[in-house]
Amino acid sequence: MKVLLFNGSPHKNGCTYTALTEIAKTLNEEGIDSEIYQIGIKSLTPCRACSACAKLGKCVIDDDDVNNFVEKCKDFDGFIFGSPVHYGSACGGITAFLDRAFFSALLSGKMDYFRHKPGSAIVSARRAGTTATLDQLNKYFTISEMPIISGRYWNMVHGHTPDEVRQDEEGMQNMRILARNMAWHLKCQEAGKNSGVPMPKQEDIVITNFIR
Image (cartoon, rainbow, N blue to C red):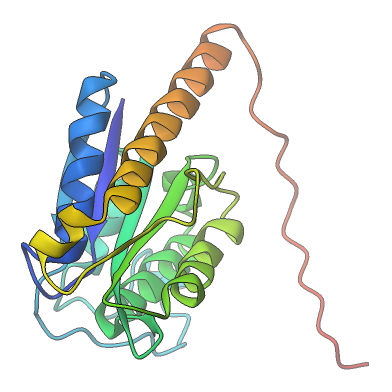
């Protein structure tokens, strides 16, 4: 079993990375492999809402790593997306990236890369905006039939530098608790699969507009 840890921060080894490495260490102790995916600082084009991915089988924008990322996700059993707080919400890079990744997966018939796989969001901030950012990121999971894994508190760490984050004892403890809960959920899913518990029945998508 393997969990993808998504670092949405433009800083490769910053505060968000510090929290993710604590998660990775704990997952390893629980016998779960993990890999940190770094979004980097390359320019990202936001979703054009063109729906071309339904015909192409991938996002029409192909000059960044979004399409490669979607294909990569089919080999993972769980996901943890991390973002710093910028202006009280998730940073622009992760928003542009995940909007396109999840929307193109939906329209191109690749939602099984995410569906029923557990997901979680973590955020880092100097001071405020954390809960709003968590609410924002969790919506990618709730629209994709992904169980949300929580910790003992909201999944956040505080600090202006990695060293300050490491001093946030409660926040770092919660990263470990979150990792153990993720490991436990994955092991339960595996046990259910091995025992013959069927996956939930899928229905055709029904879309209802509110204009009468």
